[in-house]
Image (cartoon, rainbow, N blue to C red):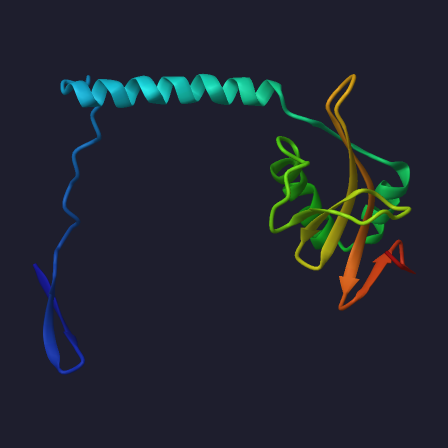
Length: 151
């Protein structure tokens, strides 16, 4: 076992880390454990059902131009967060999603930091989220494609 002089006192250090036992899988023996494992299986089944009900995300050609005008960091931030935010419940109001007042851009807004994504949701015949525009918010102004837009 080694020691080190630290801040006026001796401090001992183990010579090597303690080996840990690998985790083992065990069968549930308590009836309550069986119930928990059955619930986990139901959750897995429920997750597979939710995945089949996911919305497909499409981009308008104008929205693709708006994305291309952003910095690489901002573009990556938008493209990374869209599937998480819009694939399953795009019409549920949250802190970052809200329905907009009637405007010429889109009926829904998604907030990603200082960026705003404006989108439309179609339920029939296929579940599709269409991204209409991507803009940058600066205080009370929105810039879409480098042009200030009044919403």
